[in-house]
Image (cartoon, rainbow, N blue to C red; front, side, top):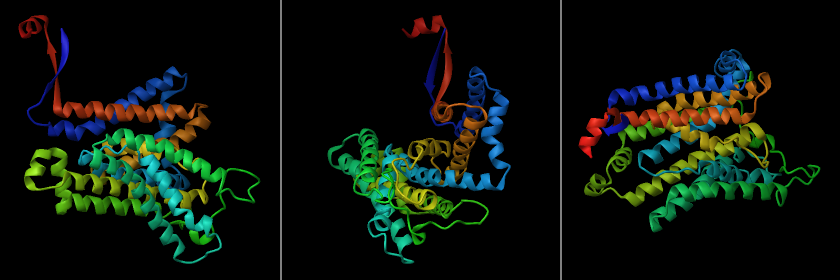
Length: 360
């Protein structure tokens, strides 16, 4: 007796709809088992991660802070993945967006103008798009695998940021700490309400999600994204450019990641430092798949993954566990999402010895 996966004639619509819910349920079950093996109360751990952050007004603000970069990046990645362009380097594009957007408040630190913040946001998007253009160029011109190039560029971006804040951009009055000058008030992203730290980044994320959803649903460009992602042969027959789609999806994804980067720096940190992201660019991959590569679904998925960051920080304090536990929790979610998605295209079949011998 053995287990085989038999390919379905057509994707199962039922499994496509149930997949994220089943994946989330399996993550909760195995996450509870993980906490039990660590000697922690699993019910208390899951309550701290998923329920406790929703009980206070300030924690809802923090949830918006955590979810906004995940949604922004996840929306861009959903376009990439729908068109079969596998951008894995959104973390590096986030960092370069933060660097480009910070040029004005750091290099021209005496300039104070109402135009400063809008220019920072635009430059952040340009920086992220330019960094995404590197793997886009390599794939479009030389057919280089974009998974490898975009991922390796993440480490280049991290090292470049570290060099900047320890070298030419280091604050001369910062007591030799690896940080830049603090941004002037005109360069700080304003808060939405006075009751917490939630800033305009969450507004940018929701607007971007609805704009990209509209594009995918009602425009010719969105139709091209879906056709090229489902069948390159049909796309060629229709006259759609595969190379043009590589550039479009990668640049859009990089621009949204860059906007997330400068929003994070301007809205929360207020300066550049060696670490400006806890891994939003990688977690957004989970957000994109959990949201079914639908920009509106990405909003919900971003809030769920934002809970894991916020609740994970509380769990580190309350349960005395490592931050790596939260990373494992997020990794389990991605694993189960991909595993459950496979059931939309394949069905599990038990093959007996006699049937296996007959096939042989």
